Length: 178
Image (cartoon, rainbow, N blue to C red; front, side, top):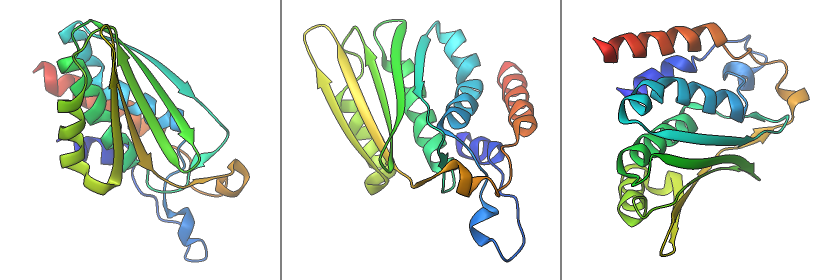
């Protein structure tokens, strides 16, 4: 279900044949993170979890389809909110070369190997995953490979559909409360 909701948030818009690369939606890392958080917010509130999210933004657009990044991010953040031992989890999302790196850290030992195994089994080679823990905190880092493009070259593609994202968030909120 989460997969179809995320696909709806990033619909493909066909462009003229002369520009096949512009058939994908333009989205920045902030756009993707914002869409995922809007979908997850009702469940996070119901669980009493707070995700403190920092997005290291650049002027680059994700050159490929943003849906796989959104799907991995949604699964990671949803799982972190379920298994964290504390109510507050720090999340950092950043572009690092051709990877989107999503780091979740808590002052507790709830996130770790079991979550890394679950994500690796679900996504296989599409991601890389590592965990670290001390006696007081744990951290998981998931990397999703996706090319990026300079903002000038991606400017000819379709704009990110903020209205569709807003409607999706409303639909998800209403569906889960019913």
